[in-house]
Image 1 (cartoon, rainbow, N blue to C red):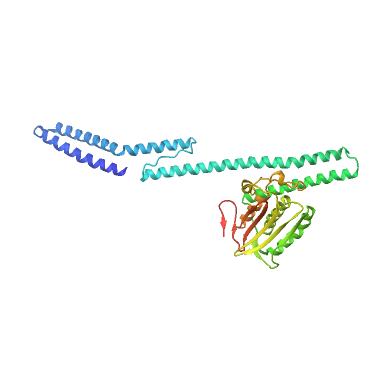
Image 2 (image 1 turned 45 degrees about the vertical axis):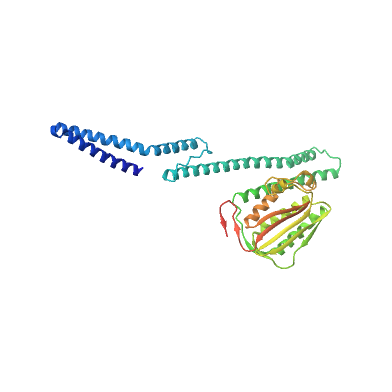
Length: 358
């Protein structure tokens, strides 16, 4: 633009000077004050005419590009975030067009994330409402039976109380899972890492878990060396993740049967794994197992174990990522191996999508 302005001024100046010289030679014999005024006025008009003509000729493509940029901005402002401004070149206007397109991409990405967040909120409300309503309805039903003395004997009375209590425990687990999930995904986890012996920790977890497994005709097989294996972890959260994997094996193992718990060291990582046999799943189901609210097919579910909200593996996934580790599944013909890989050193990721600490 500046070059066009300078070029127009220079060409107009020399063109006007040439015309002024010609006119002066023509009217020189008859020169007087009025003639000089006429020549001056004509020279000024000639200069203005040439300048505007040349400047318009040189800048007409720039004006078209600016108009294209303005139309693009108006289209984006009206909500058409799929619109992209054509790139006019590699000059300044081309850079402006690139910035406009980048802005549109960022706005489109932000709008997509906002819609996903809104959809997630609605899914959260829907799933939680459904999962809480089922045990709550049962509790109300049992309490009405007890309130109206609608039972035949003391055994039936005890059974109603026992069933109502089990439903309250199911509701508590659902609420605890929801609270833990929202805390992890909101970035307010605030982990406290310290160096512990994972061997001793896992031994304690299995001792507490074995009676529960035996009630469901399952045997826990331990497979790790009896020697200290240290890592920096948040004990409470890691216990939650391990317990979720154990409960998953408890629900979906073939019964009677057994599942194996392994702990081993691989270089800078420590691997914890749970192996069990269950009903096979498809590749599509494998990909969904760690998604929130995903529940296994009824054919795979143990009817004696209260169902959760489908957050167990998702919570374990967030906890492992919080530790800078990795969680996964290996599956072949009904043989499942859920594993957790944790770094021995404090390699921690604060899971909020942006902040990382190494």
